Amino acid sequence: MLMNKTQQEELFYGCQSTIFGDCCLVFTRQNILRLFFTDEREKTLQYFEQLTEKMNLKRYDEKAKELIDQIFIERKTFPLVLKGTAFQLSVWKALQTIPFGETTTYKVIAEAIGRPNAIRAVGNAVGANSIAFLIPCHRVIRSDGQLGGYRWGVERKQKMLEWEKINFKNKFIYSAIFSLNPDNYQCVCREKMARFGELVHFLPNQYL
Image (cartoon, rainbow, N blue to C red; front, side):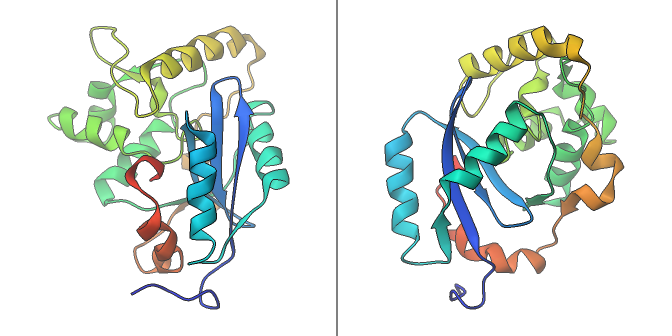
């Protein structure tokens, strides 16, 4: 059952150009719910416009630009709202321990969460990540050194990794902020996610 607008926390969305292509953000006044790339910006915005009639979702380009600039230029971190299984949440949390400018493998992540034989499942969880960059799934590669997949395009993944290596000398690393500071890391339980249920219901897979 969907919530009506008076029951749900106010949600915002917006898109902004980045060096990695157009990036879209879904957020509240306190948290980030989705961060994803799109190669069809106008189509994506039209889709969000359709949602505004069904839920408490408003376009807020100025704030989206501010947040996206802070993420990609200033490399700031923000509280996240995540929806997933316990296994997925453990994988996403492990991803945030990968330092800026470095990579790891699906095998290493599987071992880090205590599931060394679940490499394929780890790969699926990495691919299901809905908050790009802040949960750095792009830093996970195959054990043979190949890039592996990326839900927003392998070329984009390669560009992000190359950019991080170039900027690694800045030493502005935020890799483990969320996992080390519970105040900044919000693994939201199923019942708490109910207030965002309408958004999750309507967003198609490429936005989740």
